[in-house]
Amino acid sequence: MNRKVMIPIASIIVFIGFLLLKFDFEAVDSSQALWDAFIVTAGGFLTLMIFSFLYRDNPFYKFAEHLYVGVSAAYWMCVGFWSNIVQQAIPHLSPWLSEALDQPFLGYKWDYWIPIAFGLLLLTRLLPDSLKIGWLSKWTLAFIVASTAGLLMTANLKANFISQISSTMSLPLLPDWTGFGDFVSNFDLSYGGQFIKMLSNWVIVVGVISGLVYFFFSKEHTGWFGRVSRLGIWVLMVTFGASFGYTVMGRVSLLVGRLTFLFRDWAGIIS
Amino acid sequence: MIQALFLSPVFSPLFSPLFSVVSHGLGPVFSWIFWILFVAGVGWVFWRTIKGREVERRVIFLMMGLTVAGAVLTGIVLPVQETVVVRNIFDTIENLEEGDKVLLSLDYDPSGAPELQPMAIAVSQHCLEKKLKICYMTLWGTGGAMIADVITAIRPDFPELVYGEDYCNVGYRAGNEAVLKVIATDFRKTFPTDVSGIVLDSLPMMTGVTACPDFSYIVAIGSGRPGIKEWVEYVVEPSGALMGSGAAAVSAPQLYPYYPQQMNGMMGGSKGASEYEKMLRRGYPKYGEFRAQATEIMGPQTVAHVFLMLLIIFANISFFLAKKRKGASA
Image (tube, rainbow over all chains, first blue to last red; front, side):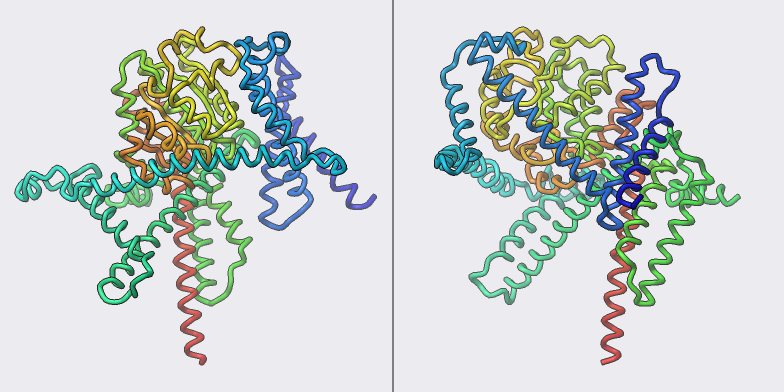
């Protein structure tokens, strides 16, 4: 027996062994207990298979990767069908189909046929080339691209441009200012204190201006302009550093989540 | 005696993590072994750095894995500092009146769950403690399972909850930004029924809700697109609805500019979630015994960050030493 056969058989035997270890033999509902044990064992094995890529590419990783892609595609297909067609379209198209699919009939709406027609046109790409109607799918794609562009343009302009400029320019550089005497006597270094508020606002305003100066290439970056530009690049570096730190935090959270699953739910080392 | 020295007021802030073994940890002996191995591992990397030898990436992966695994097993819990950005969300919910409606949008998938699910659970618990009515929705096809998990997690603490009166789940609708564009002005046009096909008009808690601004507060918890950015662009800006958010750490830095004008608070990654859990425990002592998922993550987080920072410092030392050696040999 060669390795290509032995390794999968050995893996299945080990999997069954772990499955039996996780199986609750005293459970009243044995089929539910078997399902629970299978889910936890499969989760543990798949996690280790994915982690194995950190050493090098291998068949276990490939198996887990392919399984993930297949399950994801199937999941999205089901979600798309039940959520879009069954829950949204059918209740407005047919009382008979609504009843058959256990959905309330919400009355006929002729405009629901438009997206259905566009959806069918999109599928013409899958038809044989000899029919020469695949180009019809471009109508749907054109509609999607145009409507998305239209939606994004107006929303982006307001939320990410006008409002952001307004928010930056309306920042008070001396928040809650009642005089220098009050500022000194009530000096507070806490997060919500006046000094930190003031510092934050100054950092934002100076950071925005110096960052913009760095990207202004119509004037040579020398003299005072160069110094402001230099400050701008520092601001950018700090921003990238903060983004990197947050990214590490996100990735470590995922790792902690997986390890907690392995130690708590799968291996049962910690309670 | 050594323990007493380390636990003294002078040293305890530095060494308290060594002894802060919570219920799920493996005990102080394991904690000591972990820290000794951690220091030895870091020392080994430093020694290789000084000698100008490379450390293979797989060794770094292994060390990072062991560091986080050890921190998880020791159950290190570190104090969490509250910030105004998170407190604003807590205070907003705290100041709502009994019976007010909150829209909770969970726009993430299982890969975002470790840091976002604790936020969703904590916010839900807070809302239900205040007797607010929660409407769950999602813009992600995978979000339906996340909503189901949150409801399963909170139900034991609130057995008296009645579906349709205290909370409801309208589920997922495809369309990304288009969904938000519509619900900003007409909620029922996109969500005529809930997730199980029950007509929204028949749910008592949805009486009077015609559009997003009819909810007293919106909390969007998301890890990508469509998510918080789209909520701001298509709901908050045109309708003026009041919104707070919870973002995955990766996307949080890009979303902070929306605070405080376009959203009044934000929980950034597991740090934000742990802050909210802390506020919840302080405001509602019954959650003192509650398993604070995000707070548990923050211990290993800190250790991993310390390890990573040391690696960056060592890499820089190595770089400058190599430059110096090159200069000397030239």
